[in-house]
Length: 119
Image 1 (cartoon, rainbow, N blue to C red):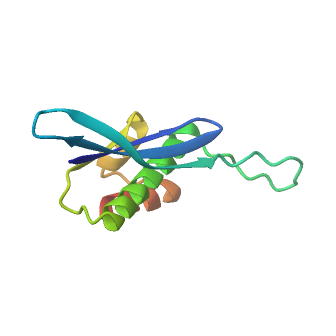
Image 2 (image 1 turned 90 degrees about the horizontal axis):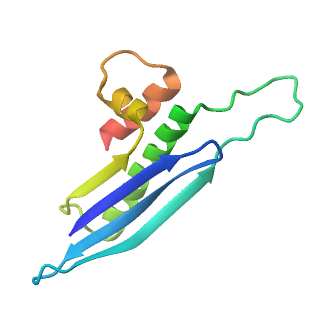
């Protein structure tokens, strides 16, 4: 058994999908969707004096990766699969760079990087 989590984002939303991959004794592979979660990206303010910046696409990708990690932790806890190999997939080079760098980053990014590294 293997668990694969796919994370992605766009300007409108970000999300994650968790799949269970199983292989029987004859080598037949089955893949099943176990869990998925999406969230809408924050909308730009309509007409407020105080403008809240909309997160950039790399930051939305980071939020999607955090959502994927939380989903992975939820699934492995609920199904009691802590020893099952698991893989978290992201197509964002920015997120991969943020996770591997030792340089100081913006507070928003660093807080999420810390959460991803702890789990």
